[in-house]
Structures are given as C-alpha cells and as structure tokens.
Image (cartoon, rainbow, N blue to C red; front, side):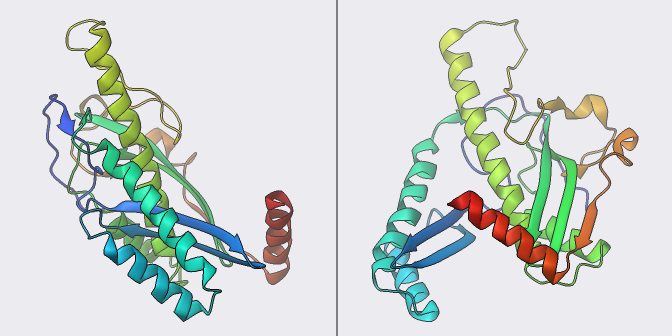
Length: 240
C-alpha cells in the first residue's frame, strides 16, 4: 500500500470528504411502474446542478426506463447533494485520528469481508486506488468489485465526516473537557477513533494492526449461482 504524508495539525478544518477527491457518495433505489432502479456512484458537488437532470435523462434513455424515473432520479441526487452542501463551511476535527472501516459486500458472485484502519486526516488518500490494489492482491476478476469497494469506503468516511462536524459543534458549544483533549464519537463503521501516532511508527492511509492480521484477514468467496439466487431471494423478501 502506498504511504502518504499526514498532517499533524489539531486545529479544526472546514468540512470536506477526507480523501484526495471531494466527491459525494450517491445511492439510488427507486421503484415505479413496476420497475426498480438501483445504483451507487460519486458526484462532484462543484458540478452545476443542471448536470443532474442531464444525467437522469441519459440514464432513463440508456436503461429504457419509464419517463417518470427522470424526476425521481434527479430529485434523489439533488437531495443528497443539498445535504452534503449543508455541511460545507462548518468545522470538523480530524487530526491524528484513524477510524475502522468495514467491508461486507456482495457484488454479483463475489462476497467480500474485511476490516482495516483508515487515516481520517490524510487528505491525499484514494479509496479507488486502495480498491484497485485490493482486487489485484486478491486476484478478484469482476471489474464491478473495485468500484463497489471504493464506494463503501467513501460512504463510511462521509458518515464519519458528518459526525466530526457534530463533534466540533458540541465542543464549541459546551467548552467542556480538559484542555487539549478532543472528543470523537463512535462512527457507524464501528468502534472509537484511535490515536494514529500512538499506534504506528509511519504515516499511511490504510493500516492493519499486526495482532489483528489473523482476525481481520480479508475474506473473498466466489458464490455459486444457487447461492446467489438464494441471497437475492432473501434480499427481495426483506425489501418487501
């Protein structure tokens, strides 16, 4: 894994994704006219909003979806962009913190489970680069797996960044706690943020503690058609 430089400043920074590219993870799950459209991708929040409608129209045309999908796709994307932009300009704390990232995905016939630590203060980190290396190291052939892994990482980092904003707001309002101590809430990814410099002697985006190598070794399984059918049937029942 490529080693990247890390800032050690403890001052708050303005909200953004803690990655090299400030991209918004967008997830769509829309059903109408008896058809369902699901997708997950990233969006540049600096792009003009007019691109949202263009994307929606092109998607509906390419996938031959009913015209009603255009408005719903555009509204869903716009709503998620509006939420992301609502945090822009607000303070967040990320200095010298690492957070656990968990992968538990099924992409077509490939099942992936893993857990590792991510440097939240490294604004040169690249989930897509990590995903490409992950797939290469584990000889994963399905080209859809890499983007799915990168998206899962970005979703979790986004949630953690939002919680960092809330944490900074609470610190500012309460003005409690010992001087020099930063409160960092547990993230949905699991566990509390840890002090990077106390645990490791080098700077990197992704690390695995040696004692956890066996516990959190990446698991990749290739499912049979029967197993995929059973999982999809179960997911369909849960959706209903």
